[in-house]
Length: 360
Length: 276
Image 1 (cartoon, helix red, strand yellow):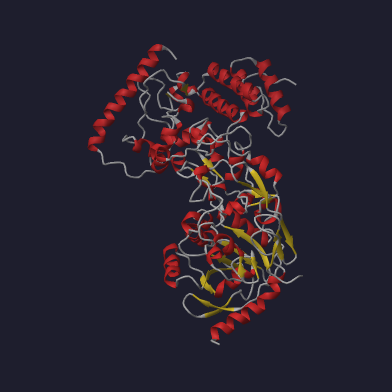
Image 2 (cartoon, one colour):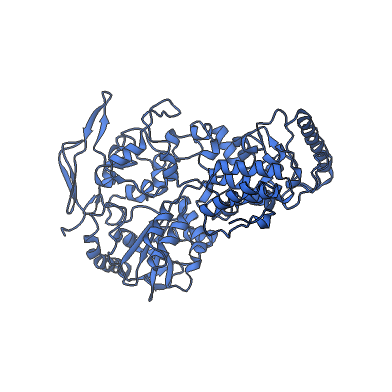
């Protein structure tokens, strides 16, 4: 683009912005966020282009070529006149793949309403002719996510690296809810598949893909691709981005609040009812063995003592063993499933078996 | 012994045969095919009603109050299953009779859950299906056997449940079900699409008789996707308009070679003499 055109475009943008301020004083406030959320978020009425403050890093080919008439009634850059069609129809004339994209089950309302909600049709200081940097642009409307991002003591690196929000979301439309590119499990494993990843606290994170490949008994949310049932994808205040309290310890006194992550799905009564024939299969007759293990004052075992939260080699997500003591010795659980129940032997205790049904 | 306790005992006796086959299933529900007894149960309003529908399948939705996932599922279920109205699919809510009825009523009211809610005595039905969490949908077929199980999931619960129902009704195939369970990545980028944009721009420039610019744009299109037949056709039209008839003819032939279904563009129609 010539220097003159650049100076002209910047001047024009500032002139439009200045007139916008005057206009905003007399016009009613923009209240329908679906009309123009990004402009509304910035206090600008719809259709106003963000003024460029530096040399653009991306430009629209027709603008770059000076072909104003492809979109406007005149080919004069000084007086291009109104658009020849409504803006979205105009964009879809060339960007024809978006005709199909926007018909997906879950379109993004700003994308449906006007492409210029997020894109500057001439040029921009950001790639893809975006009006702002991706994170800023999204959180301009998605205020709750902005709050999570600023308040989270445990951040998720996916939001601050690479394509940021677009690492997981399609800003135009998706067949998957929440504009996700893929189901949570597929998205998560696309990154959590290496041995070198570390968490916000600097500790090494499990290679989840490898772990799941080697452990065939998957926890329900994993099986159903619902990682977000337990993890907060945008950041949180619990370790490992957990969406609720979950004890880190091997022993912890029983407190329903300490387990509220598990009780998001599982029924608390199954662990606090001493006698039952319906709430759990881990029982000897009517004696609830979950209750026995958890409800010991001061020494209740936490879920992790016996269960792998993601996947295990044994049934019922029962782990092979648990690290015990400071030396890292692994205490084997030696669980055996039997036709009427199961047993554990040479573990925390001598062999104990249980029966919850008649032999078939 | 109170009448209610006797009823509970009878209930459990009926369910024992089903319980016998429960334990070996690793998943959080009993085996598909397990019979489910059609017992008379108490509704939230206090009347009596059989658990299972007289005809067709029964969609049992197990939930509990004070649980966000139950609330979210209940808000989704009505609209989600509305397309099955008149197709012998009967939605029934099931809640433990140990829950406070006022809490259940409040949740039902607030979520607009319009199906009948039955009270599960002592969690007997929940236990008989070996369930271990809420909320969950269990579909009982016309033969009174468990035919499907779908737990709530944060993303695409309705889409998966709908597909499951359509699969049971024979509307879709197993492979279509798998596409719902593992949808394709929602992308839209690609060289072909970039090529189409340049072709569209070239077409607009061609229509405004900016032939040089149209030529540059269509060549960019073909750089991104040399096999885009419509761009080859447009290239021919532009070249013909510029009087480059031999090159135009070559472009038209190339377009036909790429896509034989295209109507043969005549160079003469573009201002060039027709040749064999």
